[in-house]
Image (cartoon, rainbow, N blue to C red; front, side, top):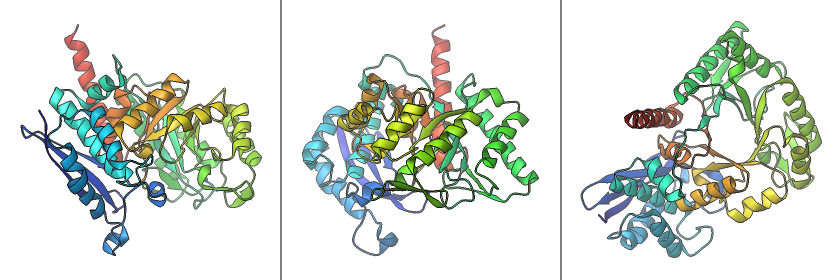
Length: 416
């Protein structure tokens, strides 16, 4: 069965910004589509084709990207078998640049994701099964969710972390993991109401509240865990997003409303780890701050997960360099971390083969695309970070994982 049609489509993400979708139709009429989330950093660096040069959608239209799929890529892959590795190699050849600045990383990624889905449909496999097969694995596993419960950032009152996540390490299965996390989430809202604190929900699905001190949010979280009798079932993940706060000129960070040095942040993290069950810290310092990152790793690297979001275009060379610097033991893998699914799989496999955890994560500007869930299962990455348990762009991924769990349970029962 061969690819009969390929075409692009401009859709919209959770923030009302255009995103790129690719649709593939096989000879027998089988139809699949895949949508790439927005990544403003990749756009700034020129990796994404994002502007049409007019005022439509605030200058963020994607008709150029749609044209690239329809007029350049489609003629090159129509009539070929939907084999991911071969098509991805062809996309790389068509672009000819290491960073996909000719076609655009979102263009090649959208096509690659759609082809991967088409291959799964042709093989009559679930998507995660095809991903596992391509990865060369004989088994799959469901990930632990790092589910966002609190949101903040530098504009909030005494909650400098971009996200605080609960990790249900004591859950017996994925359904219980989600249900118990949401139980704590709702209990936390009740505690805020009891303390007459105003709050709202962030775009990622976390609770954005106001606090008297930076520790109060964590104290409320521990109270919610005790209130639900789930204190022993969870550990905590933090996203500091300090890479966005780093001033390369003087090596300082604008953290919690003031300029601070790396050591100040390290001391703060150490106190948090002493007071609360911290499991993971994402972007505690900028990966460009090699001296500070080395100090942080020396202090906490043996006791917690120190994850980095390099930003864009993961490569084995870059990941190896970070590992050699002994500044991280995990990396955040987003769909937009690479320009094809093959590159994503290579990055994940590199991490797994070199003692680094790979956290499969969503980003800003997400849609209800569920490819991320199958990627986490198919690569047995062990961790997925897909936002909070509210907003459809988040719950779509968690719901897909619930369906996968049921499929795997049914398969296991059929073999008994």
